[in-house]
Length: 130
Image (cartoon, rainbow, N blue to C red; front, side, top):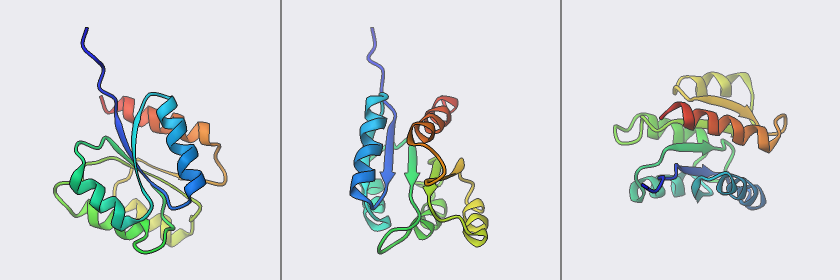
């Protein structure tokens, strides 16, 4: 029987405790994860790791924030087709408008959505991409 290949999720989140909880939950639910705590680090991960099935992206991070990272990857032939779910506390009208220009799968508000629900949304996106 062939071994099932796990989906790989790049989790880009600068808050260490939240990053730990997110990756633990995703791995418990059968996904492989790789992490980055800034946009710069996430770009380095993308250069070294293939294929990545989905990016879980926070917007507010030190250094290169999520919006700049999103702009870079969506304008790069190698990365533009990687599905992105933005999970952030930042929800101003300008931010939402800018993010929507990059054809993301979904924008989820961190403070208003339970982690289990967020993971279920991510799983739904990955399963629909089969």
